[in-house]
Image (cartoon, one colour):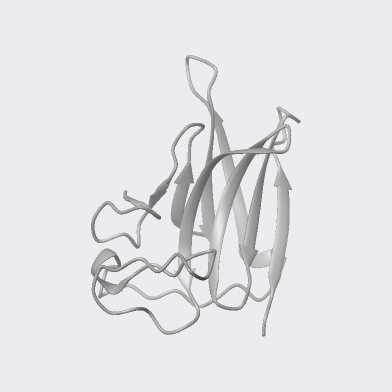
Length: 132
């Protein structure tokens, strides 16, 4: 079962880091603040996407159901750290935001307190990702 784990520190605020995890079934990104998860977002399913909109929480992290995923977009799973990049930003009120790019294409955004975060693959807002 393929596994991928990467931690990307914020270059201007060492309290923040993004963790990308692919456990061979599903991939997520997490925004950490001093090690605590302050935002998370589903990135893609590796295992067969569950039909409909039922979220099965028996196996965590959960696969995103088909009703919440755009039909016309596909993602090739991450195989190397060089395929992942974060673009960091600080808002006017001092909040840190992280944009997740896979192979230089924007895929998701993490903002403190956004659980879930935002994904370009989300067809509608759901428990694992909000529409970007």
